[in-house]
Amino acid sequence: MLPLLAQPSRVARLGLLATFPATVPGAALQWAAFFGELVTRGWVEGRNLLVEGRYNQGHAERDDALATELWAAQPDVILCTSSGAVDAARRMTRTIPIVMCGVSHAVEAGFVVSMARPGGNVTGVTNQAGDMQGKFVEMLRSVRPGMKRLGVFWSPSNVGSALAFKDAELAATRMGLQVVSLPLEQATDIERALQAADRAGVQALHVHPTPGVGPAWRRIRDWSIHHKVATLGQAAWVREGFLMSYWASNTDIFRNAAGFVDRILRGARPADMPVEQPTRFELTLNLKTARALELKLPQALLLQADEVIE
Image 1: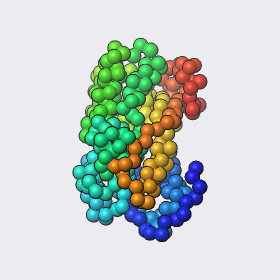
Image 2: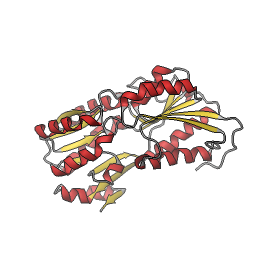
Image 3: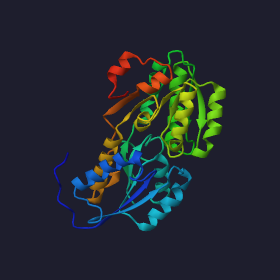
Image 4: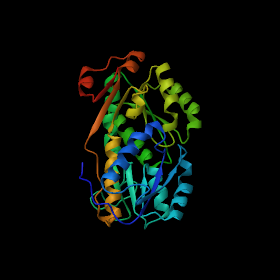
């Protein structure tokens, strides 16, 4: 951790374009890491930092309107926690700095020119999701050795999710597997998607943590346990009944994103700030769910786990 930095004398305005506020339990730890790091760097909300938060509450279609509201508030920097949020913010402004927080495919989506030299008003921390699709498929196949059909819940309107789905298709095809597309833009469409998964006979599910998909995770969990389908998603979902997660540490991502916000508020230019990729990934497994699915997790996988839910 950095030593406590001198507190800036000016009052800065920070815009947040995110899915959920800190009052939602699943988001509380991430925001605590983010604002805790800002305090360490001398930025204290209510003293020298004004925060304008806009949250789509799982309705990604609201991102454009929320980005418009933030632009009207003229913040010094905008933090975006999803590809859809970055896309909406970029359409609204090419001058206000934008910090990505856990967004994938930054180059392919056109958010930055390159990871080393972003070249525009966007920089930040990726979650490396694009590079991990093959790993996700391999892990699900390791717990379902005879798997033939993998279902993927994803959001077509979310740029990062759409690109990650293509990567998953390529990885699965190389392994001789069929990918069943389960597009989901809002949680109200979940029953239709689950019926499609049932008809296709999927044996495992990879669930993208997009604003459109995320709010439906409990229904997906209940359906998958009833149908004995293995699930891979966020660590927070594994603690509540998903089978497994292998993901970059979200608290690390949010904490590191605060460093980008600090440097920009102190005068750094996003165009010159290399995009950061995570270095620490966490494997979380739920043995109770494995028993409910009548699965025996490989010993090698258990030995690698950072957290095992009994």
